[in-house]
Image (tube, rainbow, N blue to C red; front, side):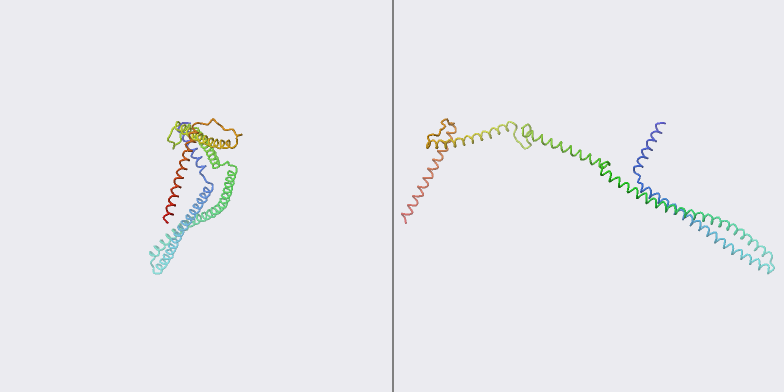
Length: 290
């Protein structure tokens, strides 16, 4: 087998397979039924044309029969008038018309036989079409039921092409979701550890460490302040109760801050006393005037 023959064979096989997949049995049966109906219509048309031709011959035969009768009367009148020559011509025309009538009768008989055969074939074809129509509807109903059953079975078992595609889509979606979750967790971990900078962050890692140290210093300062305040309370209690130990080793910075706070409180008290004295003097002056 040559290359062209093999290529032709492969192409024909591919086309045949594609046609088999695209072929719908219901549509094929309906098309076949319509073709049979077209054939029946053609047979009916043929019978009608044949009958029309036969009627034309019958009309022509009746005209010839009328001419035969006419020539027969002409021959009789010519004999009565003693014109045998005219009578002979009339009889010759009569015989000619009779011969034509015989030919027409043979043709009419043939057309009649053909018409009878076509009518019989038409009736037989009509019966076959009716049988085919019944069988066609039965096959279509069975095919549709089988197709519906197959679709239901494929949907329940997931064996169909559509369900297979859906299952693959679900699996791909699950895998993508897992990948995105893992990536999001990794990015959060890197951002918390400082390995990656935030998109809205203006500083680098050094700035972040400095900021963290500053915050820790503030926390430590606030803690020392609380300790100092707690220490003052302990000293006050020690004055009233000699059994309480007073911590003598204090931080100089804390002591300085406490002294500043005391001075501020003292100044605030002095200001308050001055304000009170001024208010009292103003009240006294207003009383003397009255």
